[in-house]
Length: 373
Image 1 (cartoon, rainbow, N blue to C red):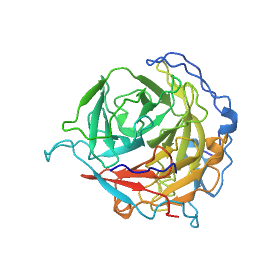
Image 2: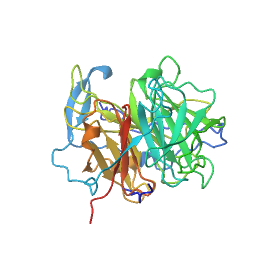
Image 3: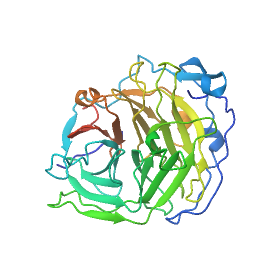
Image 4: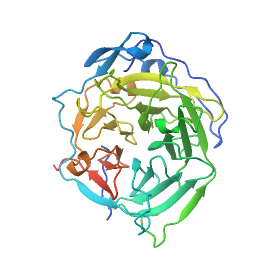
């Protein structure tokens, strides 16, 4: 069925000035690394609505844990959820593919197509599905080990007017596979029909870039969420990684931290810049498990297990400044929110709504449309 889709702890900050990212022009897909000119603006990190604790990892430094306000206004989404089911690739009960989905992103090149992937312990595949959850194609990244793939994004890249898929191997289960904290794979978005085939084809992806990054000194993080800034459209856009906090839970509180990766290359690991901390859900649901930004850059969404927060962003505004404002409360369908597994979230191609799913067998696919006028 074709649908009309819709666009819709931070060490606070002991790092007072931005860390500069180095340039490197080596990239397996031909891209040139670049450092964004507005880095200093985006690194401004005035904190708001936070609880202060002592951070044992920084020799007694002050850490702030942003607390989700209890009175957030409702977003203009979320009354008539559309529910589908992501179909398994075979009838075999033991087929574990598409049962541990941890990332979802809408295609920019293909109408009614979504990109998803499994979590750790599975094959290094990106799957194309349509908006009814039907499998369209399997795209295997050649020669890659799936460490802990946690999120996927679509955004600009080295070639103008070309959309790219970004796969974030950003979780903490990859420590024994990679030297770097963060590994991101990038390749040109393939062309896919939204009509489900009789037999799901497999395509080998042999041309891709491997982008490597490290957290700043003293930080050892686990991340479940990632998005790519579409604005401005530069050869190597900024990639944002959101780490997983635990709120105010003992033995010490840890916030969800947003890091920016600028000028990433294949040759050397780039040190990311700590942008700010953000909240997830309430005290019992603090962890950010998925994130996305709309194709026009005007909306940023992050979800926890049970709720989602949606920030508006004005034209030319930095991500850091946008995240300083209050978000609205974005609904998560009850069948999704009842899960104890991580949830993925992604805007529709036009930004007029969002898709969300969880690690489940079978996995539900929810589309959250705008409030009916």
